[in-house]
Length: 326
Ligand code: ADP
Ligand code: MG
Image (cartoon, rainbow, N blue to C red; front, side, top):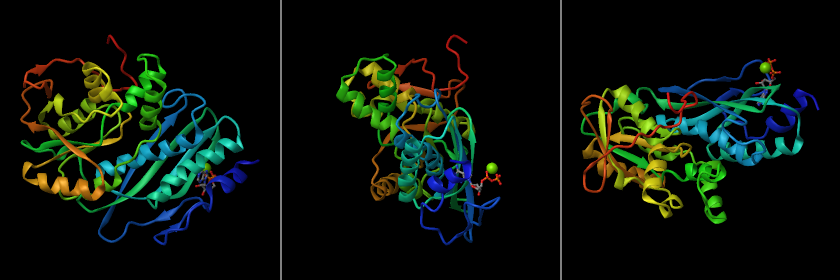
């Protein structure tokens, strides 16, 4: 099978064409234009075997996750997905793997009417790089720098189960087979919170998706907005599997575990009913976990326990270049 046969068989004509994309796969470039009054939101995420997923990972779930982590960035901006490109490096051509990978990817793409419009295919260590294109009414993006003093901080869904699954695989924690399986779904099949991101347009101020861990990702909002924040650890929406483990592990994984792909966002406190209505409309739970305040030096983020006493945790969110001890 040649590179061109592969593209044709697994990636071309798999979806009904969208009328507003004027040219998809097959030419030197794809062509699309944003609708009137809209701007494009564009994001790229790369997944490398051995770094972002284990060797031999299930191909269908990998197809899902590769697109899901990209759609999650659109969700965090309040963007509607429109199209994506796929750059794929493969060590060799394995038809079963390609069939399953593309199926997992297109199943999710079709849920969001997001069309594959191009890409690149090459031989090399297994690497998947997707670029997504979304659309937002001009000026309505939920930007990291938009948090305001006094804003509530909210988190969607639950946190920490993806990190728990990783701990199980790495034998850092002993998990029953049942717990491992339940938590693994969160790690391998994240749900991008697209509907919530859209419903929060005009309501939320700042938003980010939790990919590297809540404290690290929230810190990006705090830095961009030049503010501080307090979180109530008791309020954290801990994943259902993690909730059955001890409180210290719950805190650590809910605060610093990655791969949850929930949204963390801020909104003015007088928007509480609107936030709850948006969450209901999107079918996603949201929990109020703290508030934005004036920056009082570093660290920007303060953690309180159930008795409103400060907690000192030296937690690091996931960073590819972070070495413990440095
Ligand atoms: P070029 O040499 O002009 O870069 P390619 O031979 O790489 O073109 O690709 C041919 C067509 O197939 C282009 O439209 C490209 O966008 C598309 N394509 C290549 N690889 C993929 C892929 N993995 N998924 C989707 N489309 C792809
Ligand atoms: Mg090319």
